[in-house]
Length: 403
Picture (cartoon, rainbow, N blue to C red):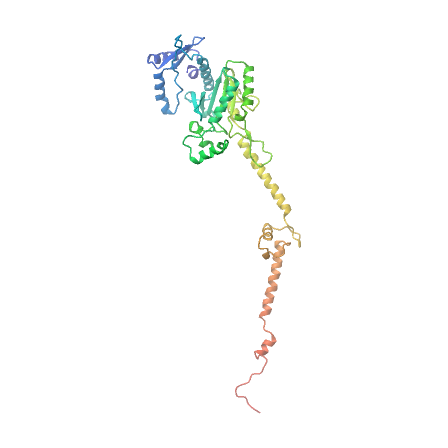
């Protein structure tokens, strides 16, 4: 905690005095004195309980209790080999905090992630630093005490944990997830278990996992990273977008675990805000947020898909325009309305299918004029009709004079 709270202070008297006071109250104990004569302090069972009552109501989880276990024969305190690793974890947190990545209460150690088979994968360090654009990050600190393939197994477990549903998931979602092995990929992240534990990352994919190597050589780190990159490809690598558009170079990170690697020595020498983070699948080192971002991800896909859709629309419009009929009478292209008319089912209304709308209107006008003329002609009485009605005969009275 001294490294985390006062990383630049070379004198720990104030911290030590406070620890001694806590020791008097049986809240902390000394677990080990390191080679540099610095003491490693841990919470007692009582102190662990007090810390939980103080922090957990504020939403801050407390790491597991470091129990005192002694060898039954020698009486030596067991588990002290953990302390070099614990020091590396604390030093990593201190370097992140020094660079402004994470508040002091935004760090948690030994956080368990329970899998479906009840195995618990514990993260050495969990960082929440939303102000630094890192809402959550899971760190594994490796002093090269583990085989490289064991790190691949850890990555696989984080990937599997990110695909779990919460126990109270609705039945429809649960049935979908059980329908086939990869069906969980059709379930939104908001409905998965990990979103009950951590906030959204602000980026595509699952919570990022970082491997920080400490107290080792550059050659060993390079060999380990090569194994992680090759054997763990299924878990960190993005996929091609399933789209009918051509020319899409963007990649789908939606089901991937972003994996970053660095070393504690780089963090201490250059600072955690420097370009000391390498993302698997990329060459070179970047700053933390640049390494976490996906410039070739969903934002690029939306842009490329929009351009491809616009290009496809222009191509379809050109093809349709090439098929547009031309009037056999005046040579003009058909309007959309006329084109639709000649392809309708009731073609008997459309007249000559080879003429455009204007020529068809002329035909209709001529037809209507001829029909009107015929109607008017039918309304004029003929001469025979007039004679039948006595229109051409002289009128005679009832009593006519006789000569």
